[in-house]
Length: 164
Image (cartoon, rainbow, N blue to C red; front, side):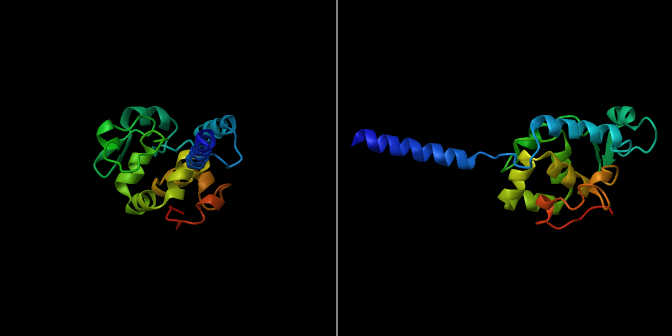
C-alpha cells in the first residue's frame, strides 16, 4: 500500500508540475523566434526612436529619453527594479519590460492581475513585441495597423492602446 500511495503522490506532483510550466505554443521554434527578432532588428531602422540613418549606434550611446529616464532597451534592468516585482517575468526583454511596467498603468494592470498575460509574455516573442509596440511610439511597423501581427490572436483579449 505504501508503494501505491507513493506512486500516486509522485504522479500527482509530476502532473501539477507539468501544468505549471509555461509553454511556447505559438507555433514558432526557438530558432524561428530568434530569426524573427533578428528580422525585426534589421528591418526596423527607427526602432529605437532616433529617426536618422545611424539610429542604432546613437541609441547605444544615448538611449531613448522618456519621463526623466534614459532607456537602453538592449541593456538589462537593474536589480533594484527586479526585486520590487510581485510577479517577476522569466524574460525581461532588455529594459522593455521595465519601460512598460514603469510608465504605463494599463500594462502594469495586465501584468499584475492576469496570469495568461504573464504566461504569454514569458513564452511568446511576437506577444512581447506586440505589447512593446503599444507603449513605444517608433518602429515596430509589423505590430501596428496594417502590419503582419496587428491583429495577433493572443493579444485580442486585451485592449489595444498603441500609436496607430
